[in-house]
Image 1 (cartoon, rainbow, N blue to C red):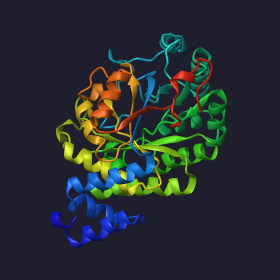
Image 2: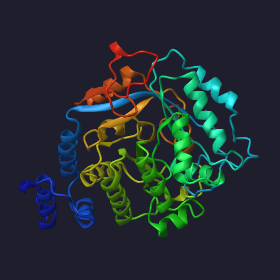
Image 3: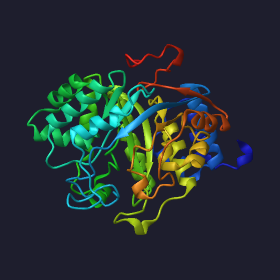
Length: 375
């Protein structure tokens, strides 16, 4: 470490990390602003290995995105369309059934459902959607709806979060993705998504889900008008909730992509910033079991790099079923990878690929049946 010519502050924080002492927000900012990128990667991989050894996880999954019509009009979003737009869609339940029926007999273990917050659809519509997915694919886990979608549909039904989430759980929703968090800082949130739910509302949905035994993921949207301090504040709020509930499975940094939205003039941050975001997240979120490098967003080359900066999951096969990042100009315009492609990528980074289910249990293909989800 001496040969890196580190500042005293960086040396102090590195000693805390190596001593497995929790770092503060101020410590995280020192690492971000002053530590060499190579050192951040080294520290993050050390901590990743404590969590998951040499393993990098992936799954066999598809996305269902029922609609891109949304009551909110976030400035960073390239996915949202007005109902009258020729680019808008709103799938009927029959259409959703048709989509998932195409995967009967295939070895997927997860259906991931997220979309716009449609003004006309209520909680009962989405309960029916979850039920039909479980009817068609009873052996898959349904990971469904961002906290923003959930908050809206449950309020519209006049129910409490506990009541609404319990109904969805009873219908077959087994996990919740992490979208909608964006940036928690109210001064930034008010500029990029002023009419969206607050940070407190997002956290409340996840807190209640954890109480009900529903595991969730978490995200950040970085690389727009926020500062490093805003990013670390966001991580800190997630770490505090995880201390309280222990219900988060994974943290997923989501990079702002600039095509087709009203913030396009900002451009995009560098790959160096992407790798810093991953590494500092792994170091700071000491109570999170997993950090995911979402490959459809980063692209395959950066995803391979990300595995040297603390990520231990890259998501799944996807089969060209998501448009959210492709509409924002991501490199992967038709995101799909075979298992062989995923495993080759992970091994090229020096790690061992392991297929997982939604709950991070390894999937044993020799024992896999199409009658149940491994849990």
